[in-house]
Image (cartoon, rainbow, N blue to C red; front, side):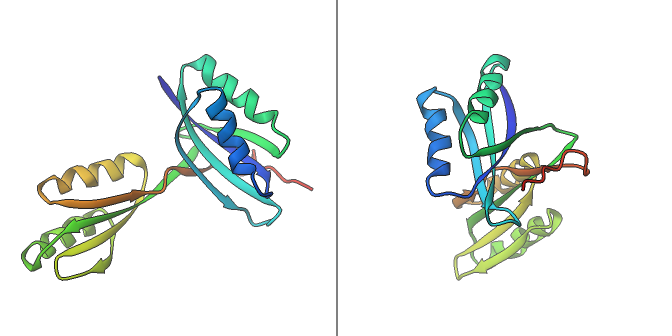
Length: 166
């Protein structure tokens, strides 16, 4: 199974995300992650989908998504030619004695402590998936209470393939 990061530029209309995810569901395509947000032009939304499958399935996904009415552009973001990021919030059980070591680990990864209570703290970490996985692995000696991850978002490097609509 291969993974591919597909970026869509779509009309910012109600139900667009539902129509796109419905296409994946109807065709039994797998979505590893999906993120969406309005662009600098509020008429458009940028959607980043991480899909998995063999080469034939990934090619079909690109073709099928491109046929949807709301889709204005489809771009495959290639590793090395693109920047990918994910945000992760991790709530860790931490009494007073564990806080210092957790803060040290967070500092090594340039993570932020965004909440501290008597018996827990929440760490915010931004980076690629391998950075986040490495951080979570280092927390193996601590009790992780909750994790929330955004999924991958990304942009291609440079100006060569920027899409201008209207």
